[in-house]
Amino acid sequence: MHDPPSTEQRVLAMHNISKDFPGVRALDHVDFSLHGGEIHALVGENGAGKSTLIKVLTGIYACDEGCIELDGREVHVRSTRQMQDLGVACIYQELNLIPHFDVAQNIFLGAEPRGKLGLVRWSEMYREAERLLGTLGVSLDLRVPVRKLGFGQRQMVIIARALLHNPTIFVLDEPTAMLTRAEIGYLFGLLERLKEQGVGILYISHRMEEVFEIADRVTVMRDGKNVASLQVAETNPDQVISLMVGRQLDDMFPKTDLEIGPQLLAVGGMGDGALVQDVSFEVRAGQVVGIYGVLGSGTAELAGMLAGDRPLAAGKMLVRGEPTTFRSPHHALRDGIALIPKDRRDEGLVLSFTVRENMTLAGLGRWVSAGLIRSREEKAVTRDQIEALNVRTYGAEQVVQELSGGNQQKVVIAKAMLSQAQVYVFDEPTRGVDVGAKIEIYRLISRLLQGGAGVILFSSELPEILHITDRVMVMFRGRMVLDKLTQQTDADELLMYALKGEASETDVS
Ligand SMILES: Nc1ncnc2c1ncn2[C@@H]1O[C@H](COP(=O)(O)OP(=O)(O)OP(=O)(O)O)[C@@H](O)[C@H]1O
Ligand SMILES: [Mg+2]
Image (cartoon, rainbow, N blue to C red; front, side, top):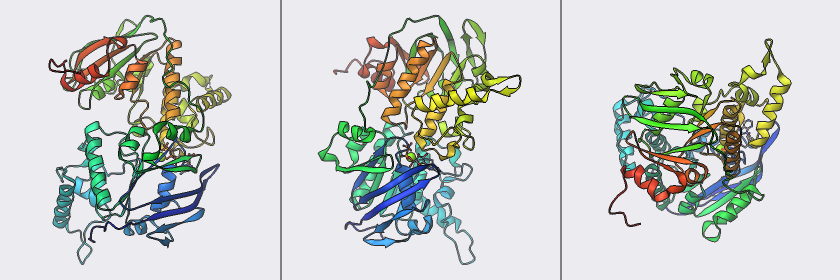
């Protein structure tokens, strides 16, 4: 292993980079630079070209035009391996781990220490893995298969893999989308340490507050172009957002007050025998019920139960007054309950299918008459959804695999919206989507309500909960510890209950 990088300025310069995909110019003459010891944020709407730019840097894609310099020397990029050897490490938007391999095997994937005969030196590998995780301050059982780890821990395995080769350039593509607040704090601490060691960090995020918390510089991309590179100290979130969207944004939280209608769903004494206990509530037409809780509070499990993904051990569920049980999401959908899952890439999409196929999968029955799919109608509906959510695609017939991360999420949401359910369970619907799409999603929720649906919103974003819900509940250690009309509570109270399970006497805020 080589020495840690020195703190002298190491520079990445990308000049005039262009990259075309069929039907779209993903990068259009982009210039980008990175100094050693700098955290440089890269932001832009979904589909702006961020991931493509870093994939050109790491050697996954060859650019059609332009050149890359590392340390002032031009590099002819031939492979990802070559870029890795030159000190470029990357954490991609999609985590790529082998689920049944253990922690150490995943860290060393393809880079296992080998002896003369090419045999893997296992004990050396485990020792090295241990040392590496130690320097990261993480304790993980090296022999546990990664499928058994939580998301934050998996992220650490990937980070360890990236740092194995002592990179001088460290690229992170939306690393925090699925992390808890504590895990994000930990990651930021790590990035600060790497920065002190002189590593140049390229950081992609949709969260403005993160950019302004840790970055030194920010580059804004729009439609495949670099529209500005600014010192963070010399700009502000509003300026960055307006550069990103290039247009005036509408009101962030459009909410129309509606008559609350009849009960659509009621649950009583619901539990899964483990992480959820004795949960009761109802959802009415025209109503948004928010459920807030920190990771591990049981919210994820509750969402799964509501959508037929996780069996009930106790309690009952009534759909429009009729008792029911779901054995699968398919059953739930038949009863009019649709889930928009959090882990959209794995659960929500068939990546090799087209945008149209994915969107209309759930509601396909609607477009079939006498065994024939009424394709003109199907196409029109798909087109409307693409437009409403501003999905960046060259058309309904593009396979979703080719869409940017955030645009894939929009397809999942569009799909659920077309299912004609009566109750929609949204699990973190605005994670990883850009500001414009966020507003569109809120507007679509509003439209669902006007159409007589009810919505259950699981969200870890307090502003979102406070602005768009009518009623809010807080979960703590598997139980509902607070249930209030949203207007009668505030962020402090919700947070207090989420963290402690009760209001604190000594709280003086
Ligand atoms: N493999 C591919 N084939 C075809 N088109 C692609 C491919 N990868 C990306 N694109 C297109 O290139 C454009 C830029 O995508 P990119 O993934 O770089 O966006 P992004 O800025 O990372 O967005 P997000 O915030 O949603 O992740 C999009 O229009 C996308 O559909
Ligand atoms: Mg991306």
